[in-house]
Length: 237
Ligand code: UDP
Image 1 (spheres, helix red, strand yellow):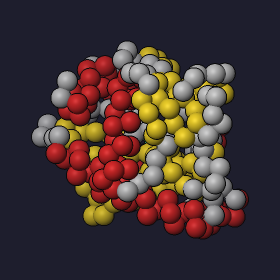
Image 2 (tube, helix red, strand yellow; image 1 turned 180 degrees about the horizontal axis):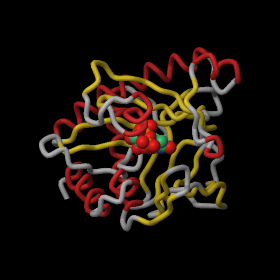
Image 3 (cartoon, protein in one colour; image 1 turned 135 degrees about the horizontal axis):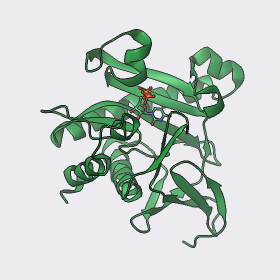
Image 4 (tube, helix red, strand yellow; image 1 turned 180 degrees about the vertical axis):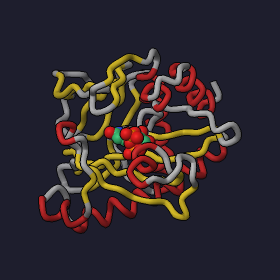
């Protein structure tokens, strides 16, 4: 597929049109931001890790867990053909272990295992700092329908079950993660965006060492090393 004009540039990716209006090409950057864009930097090699890991996991989710995703074809280390969707403006957050904003907001110490996985919806809006919203807010404001939310909830817990087991197998605790869904032209909801160390908290199962973007957010050092370590665990490289 041929890369045509740039449609959009986000914080971590660029999106290009192709000759087929049902498909786009995403290009992953090394740019890193945190705190709604207030902190900016670059993580060398991140784009490659995120592109390859996200593609690998989405392919597995399709094949082994029956989750429809936007993944079509990896073109190279940083670029992938994806199905074109309109993004549902919600960040869907699943947690298995308390961390980050959950710990802060609810006073639950980071690292506390949760008795069952939790689900949160946040409105995608940096200016408003992605406020948490509930199902009534979502339906009332038309961000998604009741049926959409049911589909998203079903897919999301299936994704969590699958990924938790997968990461356990490579010695990583899946603490929490954020996913996004989109709607295709014919109204089908599919998993979109990415699944990567930018969007998941990964802790080494034994040492609890952080192997994700928290190393950048919290200035913990060895940020590149953490991304490369996740790449090594997933691809054995
Ligand atoms: N997350 C994300 N993008 C966001 C907010 C959160 O990918 O804009 C991910 C984050 O990496 C973590 C999970 O969602 O894996 C939960 O994040 P949390 O709500 O704890 O927010 P944070 O502490 O990162 O601000």
